[in-house]
Image (cartoon, rainbow, N blue to C red; front, side, top):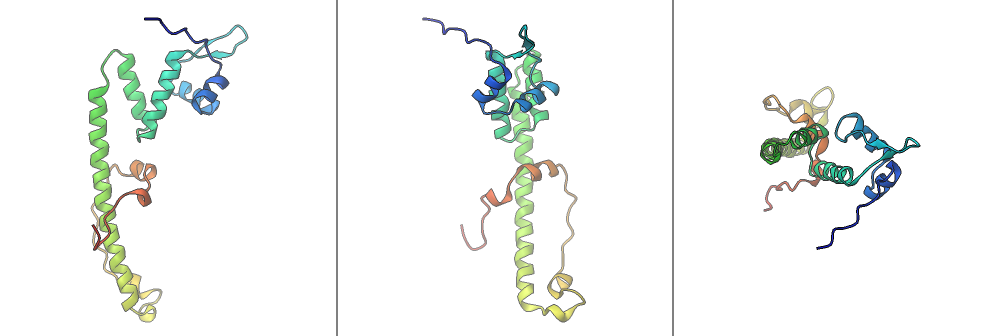
Length: 169
């Protein structure tokens, strides 16, 4: 079987263009250790090979499925250290799924509260209190302290979640 010809090293702009990245992003990944510092040409240009290309594709895909750069760094560090990262990835995914399930549960609770408040807004006159009767008279149940959801809230889009609507499957 014939081996493919080795591709010539790419400069940062070429690599960025090929992968649809900004060159600043590639330099940032180098600065935070996700991408090794590349070798340089005689003129001082960064030169990237196939391994760099593969690594950047991996980073892009991992980001697209919701992994943070820190989590991606953990995976790459395991691989670079000679370990199989897949058990760690399964653990990360389990943790993310649990956090997402908790977020969905809380969003459903929030939806129920907003529906009740909306009903109160129809029934309670605004003038019943100093500012806004429906809000001031609506009972708000105590919430359990939220943990480990802030990063997930920033990454997710609740409008894109497939939450059930009351009365509809």
